[in-house]
Amino acid sequence: MSHRLPTLVEMLEGLISTSSISSVSPEFDQSNLPVVELLGDWLSDLGFDVEILPLASQPHKANLIATLGRGPSGLVLAGHTDTVPFDEGRWQHDPFSLTEDNNRFYGLGTSDMKGFFALVLEAVREFRSTPLQQPLVVLATADEESSMDGAKALLEMGRPQARYAVIGEPTGMVPVNAHKGILMEAIHVIGHSGHSSNPDLGRNALEGMHRVVGEILSWRTELQHQYRDPAFKVPMPTLNLGHIHGGDNPNRICGECELHIDLRPLPGMSLEDLRRDLRQRVARALVDTDLQVQVRSLIDGTEPMHTPAQSELVRACESLTGHGAEAAAYCTEGPYLNSLGMDTVILGPGDIGCAHQPDEYLPAANVRPMVQMLEKLIGRFCV
Image 1 (cartoon, rainbow, N blue to C red):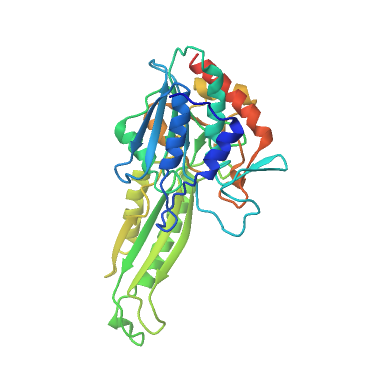
Image 2: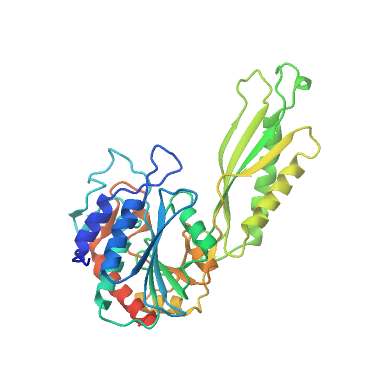
């Protein structure tokens, strides 16, 4: 049965008040099903065929694929339904209640990025009586902020199928056609503990890790000389030594030591190749020792994204915004949609600088221009 589609502000209120935090920490992690079901009801009222697809890895979470129209090309308007956890006590506004103040809409997910869905629905409202020549797909994913399981499930399904995709992450309404990837690796050096008074009584894993760190820093220098892209504010790949722990007491030879690193590759760099090179480098650093080493991935990682500047979608977004496409340091689900055969652009309201921060907000001044931009994209690629 058809219902009245809520107003834009009512949709924002409904999305923000429906908590959908995802986290690698189980105490914070929540289902996104209430948000997906809310979107599904609204999209059904607009005539979309709605599919809610639970994740095999986490059945209490789901992706949503809603389709209006048919054809071989078409446009996907995409976003993730989850938010990060929030800093309780540091917010001046209720994170789960939409607050209009100082020409801003405050609330957890207003900018990153549940608020985008309300703007998409507002834009689609204008096409209720307009026959589409190509399909319009609204895609809402799970767990972008933690595991990327929603995006990985789409790859396994080979869906959705379309020619173009816009992901409404907060870019200040400036199109982004490229971003770095990410991988996080753990290097675990295993020696043998013993009394510190005699080095021959053990094998010091911490001294072995010293060699490993030197090798990794040399590798970083080589990567930064080999790969550069001036489109990025930081134009080279970065490698951060983020966490280290070894041993348990000053008077014991360190028996084990573990280092965690974060590597952000540029487009054109392969995660598989980087992992292989890291393992070879680490093994080489310890080749003449009696130490053992294990290297494991802390996350699956996300490949870098690059959509060619010549793409019709990139050019359309540049024309609509009056900005040339830029490159970003953060990761999105863009590489997964590109792998499905779509030209993908990241373009949305809000500022990435206030994402993951207390008092996250969506500027009111972004709302109407973004809706109009979405209407023009739908008109161009679906009508």
